[in-house]
Length: 322
Image (cartoon, rainbow, N blue to C red; front, top):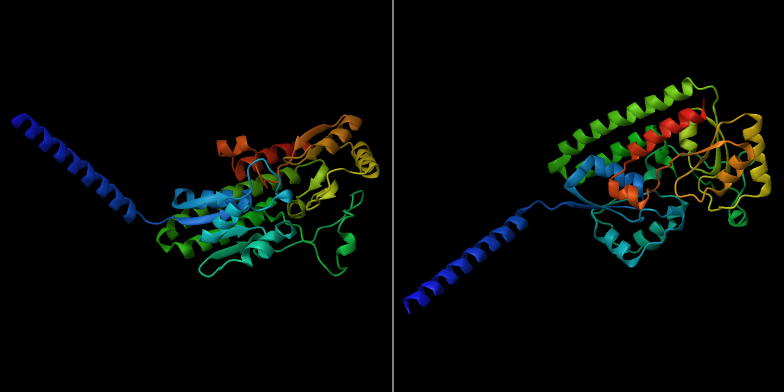
């Protein structure tokens, strides 16, 4: 009897210890500061916030790695994420019309910070240059007075700096307790963007030529303007076209041949068919110029950043302008 009594007391004591520890852990979790929930539509703003806030926030990106932003459609779970987040960051152009039309118009945004990248920087209009194929599908529907802006504002390190500052301000306002932490990280990141800017400037300054060729869409209008580069491409940056006409390809082949251009660029997640056709005819090297709108699944899992992608662009641009 004494043995069973001691055993019962031991089991009871053990249970009390477990319950006490569990309650303590629950209490500790409840006392932890609540992390800001942040949702971004695509990779650039996701990565900027990842660099500024690190593990201080709960961050998610709607565009799945390896997919094109031009064909994105939000799922019900995406809408729930936006509804429940504290800060929502999107690009704000024509490719994201669904944000205003389907999401923001249907949810209560009081107490939520909503940022559109196109509201943060000075915009430039999309342009159709010599040899570039125009989109036919929607041209008849557009008003002659309607302006179409290039949405790829982050491709310029100078614009990236403006965006990073705005994101830091939004984070600091929403989470004043960690404001100093965000600002310190921002300062370090701005130094990296300044260094990147200097590298691009030096490449262009010392280059033999100032012309680049894209056998693809051209989402680098802000970049080209900032570094005074001339360009030719199959399509404008926001075009949804993927097959170029014979006239467009012929024009680009002649341009590469006549100016002895050493590199033909393609962009990320492209089928590269147009660049391949040009390179085959001109025996020119094909290289990637990454607009950073998204990364592959493998790159995402490895933690590849905007700075990593742009540093590769530095090397490829150097080769293209030699």
